[in-house]
Image (cartoon, rainbow, N blue to C red; front, side, top):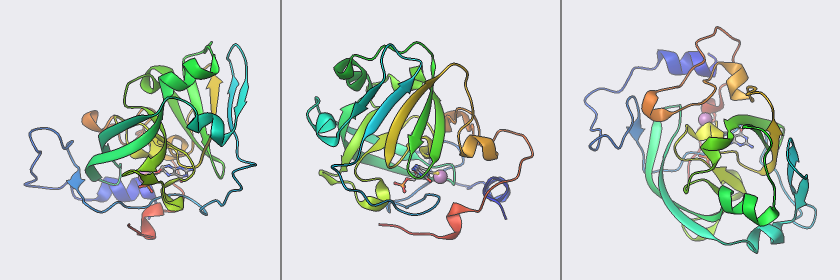
Length: 220
Ligand SMILES: Nc1nc2c(c(=O)[nH]1)N[C@H]1C(S)=C(S)[C@@H](COP(=O)(O)O)O[C@H]1N2
Ligand SMILES: [Mo]
């Protein structure tokens, strides 16, 4: 069964503790850290790695990994919520705040929408205003240690206030676009924005869903 269909058919968890509203409706708490993605885990030569900022901006920029590590660093401790119904509390990530990143590179956005790009060919759309909060991080570390390759090393985005499919692993680019266009999962049955506290899981349209990432369960 396809992913969105399968999640739609899952029983909504009952008698759940909402932890005073901290756990969104329809979610279950986990202490493990599930690993979920489409396709293969990339391998990198950091000398060849780059992060690009392109599209409707005052200037396009290409950054090295050192550029990122030289920027002001922030720790965040946040709850994360996956559309497949697991949530995990108190995850500590280290990296560069997106809003600090923009300032550091001197980029002025000329549009309000961003297509996030990750390897290999993963995309997710997001509104610029959803990137500007204090908790939005270009993260290289988890729990004080470099991210594992499966969790997105060398760099992943962390957008804790939206479902975790927006938190692009193996992040390679921010493309400023003029209209809000759907990324990979958003084209495949999932909501354009994805706020877990509003249960914005599905697009409501009847679309073909690609292979279920949840079939190959893995944790660490
Ligand atoms: N590049 C890339 N990033 C991705 C994905 C992907 O397939 N490719 N999957 C997303 C989805 S659907 C989820 S739930 C989270 C999972 O992150 P985790 O494996 O660290 O738990 O990564 C997101 N980021
Ligand atoms: Mo996911």
